[in-house]
Length: 264
Image (cartoon, rainbow, N blue to C red; front, side, top):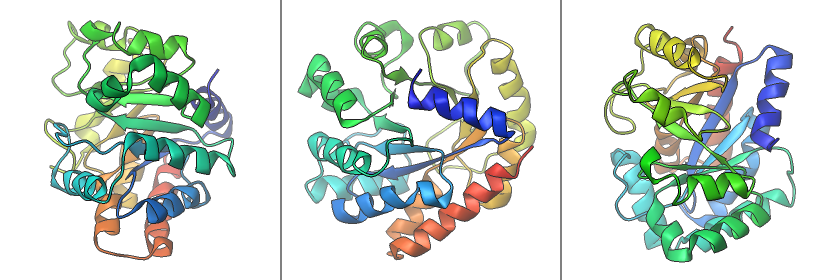
């Protein structure tokens, strides 16, 4: 059982949906992003998704791309991202942390070293968007053996023939991408998402969370209402990019969390 598994067990017992927030490590700088990260649980965040900046983020739209490029320009690295996790864990041993990013920085560090360091820092799960199921031996299976959840993305183009491969070796939860495209590209629609979530849930016992295109408390409530929870990233990163103080960003996050938690 990981912190992610424990969190979903607790949420089910409380009759609540999950709210997951994404921020980019090092955006707009490491000190500010760490302050935001530390404030997320108090704003109602159940799981923190921490972006690892990378030079070629194929799945990310302009907002998150800019955040990543800015973080890299400011000197953010994979090692500094793990430092953030360690600093967060000094005051919070409960909230799950999922690193989201791409395989290249992990490969450069070395898989075994990365997994040992991530587990020691307090990371609970990984989302690595450019490693398909056919490459599970590269990272997915070693990560599971190291005690980390490996969370896979399903999309509107994941048909019934492909879905079993996507679900194989996935753990923690399934992340359903609500739109065809990059992050922040369009608004998620509960009417479109609901049948797809039901199709995935018929094939797995894992929680199914929905992300991409959620930017208001009302949207968070609507999407969480047809899934086990929702993930918000670009909308939060936009607040950070606007230069808003940490307290204002956290207040925005709290509104989104309230929407998700109010869903039934």
